[in-house]
Image 1 (cartoon, rainbow, N blue to C red):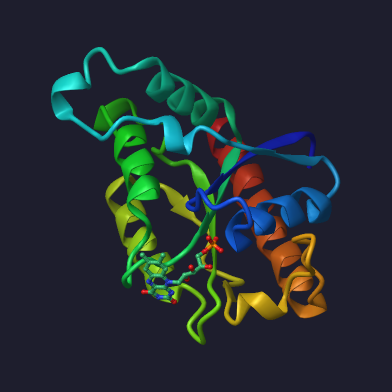
Image 2 (image 1 turned 45 degrees about the horizontal axis):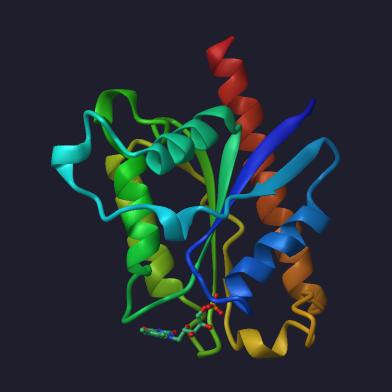
Length: 188
Ligand SMILES: Cc1cc2nc3c(=O)[nH]c(=O)nc-3n(C[C@H](O)[C@H](O)[C@H](O)COP(=O)(O)O)c2cc1C
């Protein structure tokens, strides 16, 4: 598959976040040739303001550059009140502008979610899938990874220990890699 650089974005600022832990597991489970960098600037982004778009703050420029330079994104979202956390939506809103040259345009993206409830953040994940329709991003549809009862899947050190979840996450990364390869073929 050649070398592939994936940017991992967690929608949680919590130190013991299960979603951030999923990204760390992805670093471990990435297929050969794929490396996953974890973006850690989401909490430093200002609130989206269209008046700042022309001269976006440096933190926004960094986010856009990191997305542009990546081959694909792996986004892990918690669910807050049936939707994605504001910090994550805020980052996506910044990255989506200006629309015609957004780094999200045609970007291969895999979405996963984790929550300690029985629904595993599926509603937040669906809401993000909807947002990425507007941005014309290329989102992996299958396999789906919805980590419900997430407290049962990680050990005390935050390592993903549930074998079925590890397998599914590996499958999501394979599907993301396939999208990256397909996007290179189209671009060539
Ligand atoms: C403000 C807030 C709202 C929440 N709303 C939901 C919800 O709608 N659905 C759900 O499954 N869990 C909800 N939860 C629980 C989160 O799923 C849980 O805190 C989860 O662990 C957050 O992800 P993290 O471990 O990556 O931080 C909510 C938590 C917070 C703090």
